[in-house]
Amino acid sequence: MSAAQAEIEDALYNLRLSIKEKTVPILSTSADPAPTDTVTDLAAASYISFNINEAHRTFSLTSATRFAPDNKPIDLRSCYFAWLNKDASVTDYFAAVQTLNEELPSGAGGSVQNLTFAQKIELIAWLSGETESSDSIAAIDSNAASAAAGNAAAIAGGKGVPVDRDMKRTGAGKMVDARLLQIYDGERRMGDHNTVLRGTKNIDFSPYRKIAATFLRNRPSDSKSMPQSLPQSAALVSNLQRKPTKRLEPIILLSPSASSLLRMGNIKTFLDDGVFTPVDAASASTNMVRIQRVMPTISSSPMTFILVDSTTSFKPTYWSRVVAIFTTGQTWQFKTYKYPNPAELFSHYPGVYVGYSNEEPPENVLNLGRGVLPVKVDKWTGTDKGRWRDREVVERIWGRIEEGMRRGGWTKDGPGMVGQQPGR
Image: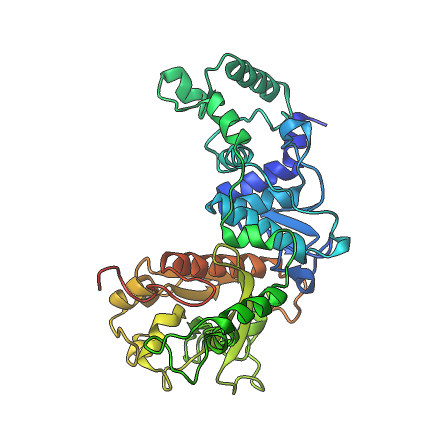
């Protein structure tokens, strides 16, 4: 097998190439996935597929990769999860690894490995293309092996590793100090009081609560700070039993136009299952659809999205929960919206236009500007076989929505500044 062919069939190389091409991989439970085998939860997946330049390659998430710090190969699931959490802090990443390992079924094939800070930034730099080689990634051909040996010599001499080999020859390359990486690798991982108390499993503190209530009951009550009819122990129990604040669900607006390819009757099949089907007249009468989706950079738990095609029952506060607007470019759709002017509307909310792959977007869609993402799906041929490209389109749409939610300050409990510009 030639070096070029070996590189093409390498899982880590395909992950790097998909990041470069901005093509979202597809997670599935089968090595030869059908549309019904695809999943969005990394804990439920066993395989990952890359669709790059019309080539379709599938790899097991438990397969070992060429990334082997300390000569211990890291599995593909751990590498992909590290990339998904590339912007997470050390504490958040450690907590996310713990959460995913708890969600993995016993048959998934082992646990996700928690990379150290130095290992993580080394892997992310190579996957993103910031570096062309890594001392922890085994080379495939002789040229890469020579480069890795050169980097090892640079580290041994304390000179660092060049971020870009060509830039280093011109004197413009940035350097990463090897001694600094060694210091990071030797740091002790710190956690907040929640992670320290929680440990590796949930702990029941109810017996200690009863002991605390006994001491509080014996303390003299302060009539100024608390009514005599409500002892401090009762107030403590009341606070502990108080229900948490209800989570606000994000809202996606669909186009009510009859010419829209996506309506209330087929939107769930498209966004949830990743398959485009014609609108089903029997189910088109529904006025609301709920879809659950994991947004990795926002919450590790699935978030519930509400989809509607009308703002008739909208309250003013609902607009802060809108995260996407599907449109056909017809401006009458926006007359009842918070911002009737399309230019202003799509500067606050991400827009999406879905058309057929053999047709160009209409001029009225192009006039809406860069705030609207145009995507294309293949025409319906009477069967859902061979429609794996639909999943790619769906992942692009969800990626756009997640990016807008992250910029708007969304958390698992609700919005931050979605629908507003800072300072307004």
